[in-house]
Image (tube, rainbow, N blue to C red; front, side, top):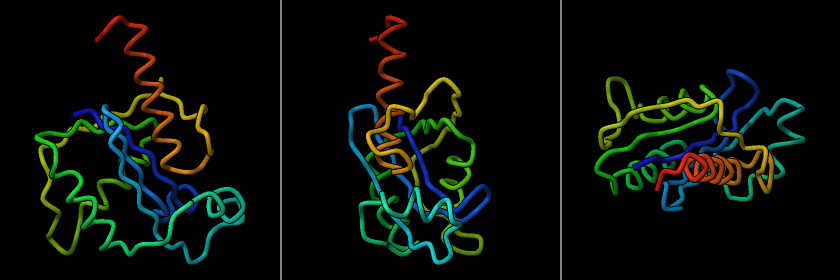
Length: 144
């Protein structure tokens, strides 16, 4: 299953704030973590549009594991490498431990923009925009 991902994080290289995924059928996952010390830009542009209560990292991991378990395999597609990095870090549940997932493949595509996001810097809206961009690209290439 193709799944489109977006994350928000506290500046480049900073901690994860939110993670969203939308599969090719429109099924969605969204979780928000508390950001204790947001940078000024993040405080102004990301925190106000999160749109959901904070979860703990463990809660995000539990929900994400259950959500991913619905698939036989996952092809995760992002438009920015750090989204993949944050997803992969979220897979790690403890020293030497990781969540159980279906087989995963990862892809970063520069051609899938989130510019059409209904709420920029909201990971769920950005993931939806990436999903729509992928649908448009597929349609334009004549794929079913």
